[in-house]
Image (cartoon, rainbow, N blue to C red; front, side):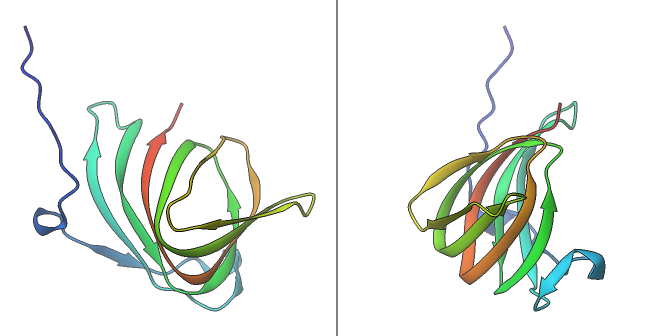
Length: 118
């Protein structure tokens, strides 16, 4: 029997990774983004953590499946056809692989993410 190992979302033991987006993705602003990676499986295909972004807007193209639970802030996610969805703290949603559009952080946004890269 394999012992079960739990991974708690506790920032005290996780180093923050700060970065900005490549210029070609930016539409507005130059938001600093912070990532607290909490878990990645042995295959590297499944990962979880916390992500945060300052105000700004950029192009997105998802190659992975992502479940998100917003803990703070407001963002607007818009698909290629111009259909926009506003998400706020307390809401959960999934962005499927293949999604193309934009992500706009209207108010500092923090989310828990769960990603699966097929």
